[in-house]
Length: 122
Image 1 (cartoon, rainbow, N blue to C red):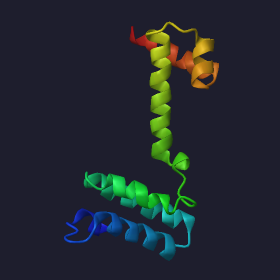
Image 2 (cartoon, rainbow, N blue to C red; image 1 turned 60 degrees about the vertical axis):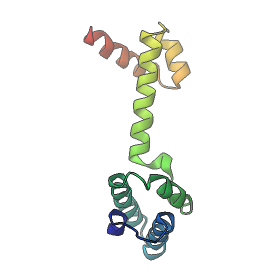
Image 3 (cartoon, one colour; image 1 turned 135 degrees about the vertical axis):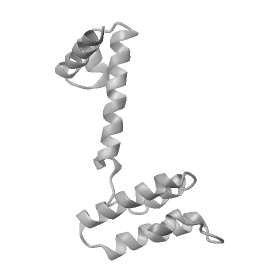
Image 4 (cartoon, rainbow, N blue to C red; image 1 turned 90 degrees about the vertical axis):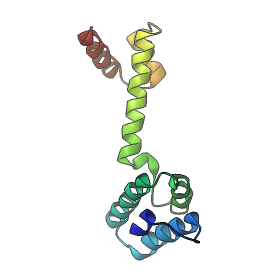
């Protein structure tokens, strides 16, 4: 996996990443270990800005194991997006708590918590 950080030379970066993903998938029996190694791979890819797309494509090949909606970072990003959506509905559009909860598909209690935090900032 450390090879991700190195210059692949004449090797195609997409093929290198695909080989790493395949090796993790084939050599690791435990789902916990696979998850650990895939997370490490994602961190290495973040250090190399020009290979992120290749990792996304390579991860499609192991998509039966790796479900992005189960990934903590995916869920954290979705939560942040939902929070921002609710804030915008409340502040910029003046939508009611009930309507904001319906649009964002969250509980009314969650919207009220966001409204309370917005009111506390004023």
